[in-house]
Amino acid sequence: MIRLERISKAYGNLEVLSNVSLEIKKNEIITIVGPSGAGKTTLLQIAGTLDRPDFGIISYDDQDIGAFNDKRLSEFRNRNIGFIFQFHQLLPEFTACENVAIPAMIGGTSRKKAMAKAAELLDMLGLSERLRHKPAQMSGGERQRAAIARALINEPKVIFADEPTGSLDSRNRDEICSIIADLRQRLGQTFVIVTHDPTITTIADRVVKMADGRIVSEENRRISPEELESVP
Ligand code: ADP
Image (tube, rainbow, N blue to C red; front, side):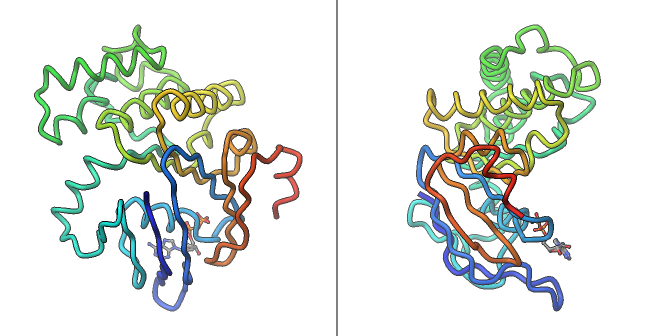
């Protein structure tokens, strides 16, 4: 569904990604693991069209998005890609429901329809009591569930997540993992997740290990937390 071919990226003299190729299949949960500075976040941002590579091709359903200008790319991103970050990045002055609805409104959906769909998603994620709460009135786990609802609202082809459980305690980490596994199962949602969290890796179909700007291994299986301990 998504193909990255020979992606390279440098910041000044620092080569951050070097000839990275990766194929993301529909309905797959991929985790990207590896030491800090390996280039994981940069790869995620490039795959998610938030940044452009110096060299290489990114295609979505065989459509080369490298040729898109910034406006077309941001429309494409709004329609096709969801994001979850380590820190929820909800807008503090808006309610949970408004935060979730915003990407749909940006995409041209009416406020009424967007708010109804946002409420439905928040309900599905167990937040029906929090629709009118602002982020400051919600717990860390609740905010992250709202961020997942926001990522889902435009029914994206893929959700990219960067350390989605990185700021949560273990109970909330487990909850977010089961939500992700459930969304893949029930909605066929595709996820690519940069993580250091062994629990997330247990729900992955594929574990991509990076080091020094390259993919050093890909494992097509579920990996146990004990095994992940041995990843440097
Ligand atoms: P990881 O997610 O694996 O920790 P990153 O992709 O965040 O790695 O970063 C890889 C390297 O690129 C790091 O050395 C980082 O300092 C550098 N880097 C990332 N973004 C920028 C930037 N915008 N400008 C300069 N250097 C950057």
